[in-house]
Amino acid sequence: MTSSVLVALRVRASPERAFDAFTREIGEWWRPDPLFAITPRGDGVLAFEGEEGGRLLAHLPDGEVFEIGRVTEWRRGELLAFDWRQAAFAPGQTTRVEVTFAPVGDEPRVTVRHFGWLEIPRENAARHGFPDAITQMRAAEWWRKSLDSFSRRAN
Amino acid sequence: MSAASLDRVLTALADPYRRRAVELLRERPRRAGELAEALGLSSPAMSKHLRALKEGGLVEEAHPDFDARVRVYSLKSGAIRGLKEWADETERRWTRQLASFKAHLEKEGRK
Figure 1 (cartoon, rainbow over the protein chains, first blue to last red):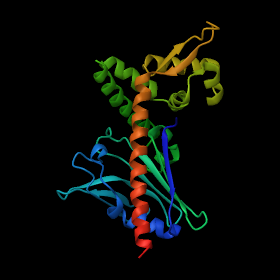
Figure 2 (figure 1 turned 45 degrees about the vertical axis):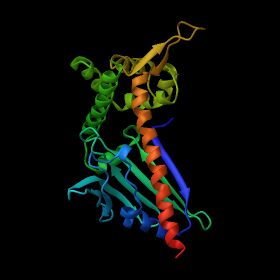
Figure 3 (figure 1 turned 45 degrees about the horizontal axis):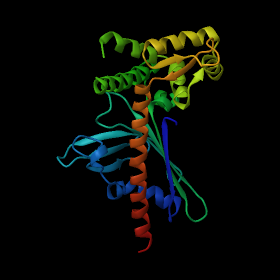
Figure 4 (figure 1 turned 180 degrees about the horizontal axis):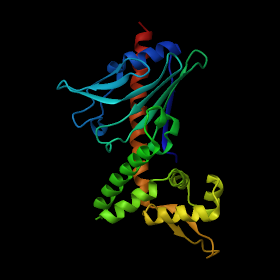
């Protein structure tokens, strides 16, 4: 058991085409999951705004926009990385998603790796300008919330 | 959860070695010596960190039947459950989304 999640599959398309579809067409293929929604009002329509330094946004039906996270890597046909935050997360808690596009014969492999906070490398936090103490505080906040809900369930 | 015990959790996790120890204990219970070696810490330093984690209610210690002098540390079940729920939900989400992504990509390819 690790604190990151890895899901991979192979696609019949070039890595560049797969990258473009993953980013530019996310609003067409993303399937909202009512049991595991990004915000209490659902997932809305997802869209990447800009490239590296841009954002992944959820456009909600009422016209509001929820920022899921910043795009930290945008290398067409190779690597996409962005922060991932859901509305239910503790304030400031974030996780990170890395998507790689690897040429394997004529069916490239698309791999999604989603890192929980225990595994977010320190450089990533530094790049965003968070001092380490703040990252730790955020991590602690997540634990506090989780343990709080366990103790409520247990009682 | 009382304010005092919350403070202890916060204190327990306000250290990168202790967070790394939690990560290692997610895999399986380990002896203090094993943890010290993996983290590159002296045995007194490791004991201090383990005490903080124990006081925070994140880990518990037990003695194996064969030797009462040996201490084996493991994560408490509540702490594991939180991480496992996140991992299970996240894995389900991406499995479903990637299948939908593939269908989208390949439907277009046949045009």
